[in-house]
Length: 113
Image 1 (tube, rainbow, N blue to C red):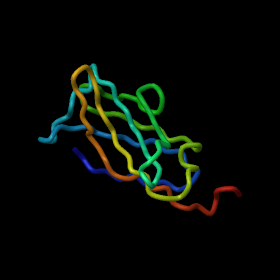
Image 2 (cartoon, rainbow, N blue to C red):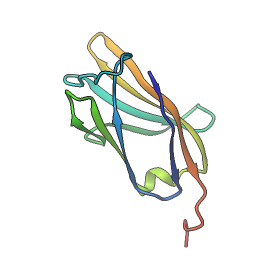
Image 3 (cartoon, rainbow, N blue to C red):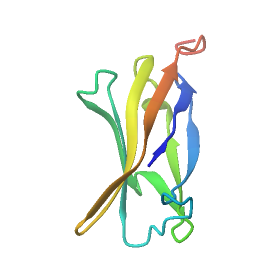
């Protein structure tokens, strides 16, 4: 499992490319797997972002383990803070969290201008 942190300023759009690898660093084949991204509120109690393939996640190269996560303005207008996040892979009889860390949304002087 990889630990990765992402930081945006409030109200930014951004696309984050992620290479999903096994413990040896080799690309993980994503064919046939469901892929999800989820971020919780800073207290870790409520889901604030929940993406799947076709809705926030794009598989760029399944055999090469490459995905993109697209954050739109509405996703980054949450309260400023650190949001625990993770990427999880699932299929029948298989479930693995492949990335954890924090999504940090920082204050911007341009929001609301």
